[in-house]
Amino acid sequence: MYRLYGIPTQNTLKAAYVLDAAGINYEYQFVNLAVGEHKQEAFLKINPVGKVPALKHNDFTTFESNTICRYIASSADSVLYPKDIYKRTVTDQWLDYFSNHLGRWLSTLFFENVLRSKMGMGTPNTAKVEEALNFVNQQIGPVEKLLSQSKYFGGDQPSIADYVAYAYLEQTGPISYDLSSCPSAKAWLDKFSQLDSVKLTKTKVKF
Image (spheres, rainbow, N blue to C red):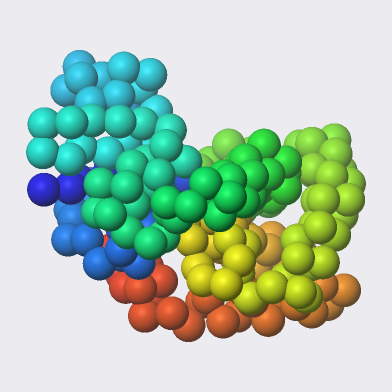
């Protein structure tokens, strides 16, 4: 039995997208950060770092969203994480690119422009918004170039890299980031939003 602990932000969503794309039956458990559930003893037994997301599979637990995505696909023997070393490396490089670069800055914009007010944390930090926007403008170019030449981030078929990328790129909607200069990325994003597994995830992972 798989149980995913988290909140409906990109790090939890990417794990849920992979679970549903792999056809895995799982339970989603919302962790109420506002009341400190992530710091309580019961949750710390699942993730000693006290952060979400976390995954429990039978008696095994793990954390860190990309690790969770890799584990899900590997434990299910899914083609979403290729066994071929070259295809797997391509998948890994895009996972890292989004988590360490483009996705990081998109998430900063999402936090400042969307979550701050939703969580009652005041107004956006304009300096952080400006910094993040500058990096997004620089770092979205390689994504557009790739998707103008390839259907997927991992090559000829979707991989966990695509679902991780989608979790980050879908934030461009709520933050009103203009993708008109990136038509291939926009078309890819629109296509992924219509996948049955993605639609299914959105019915489960919510506040």
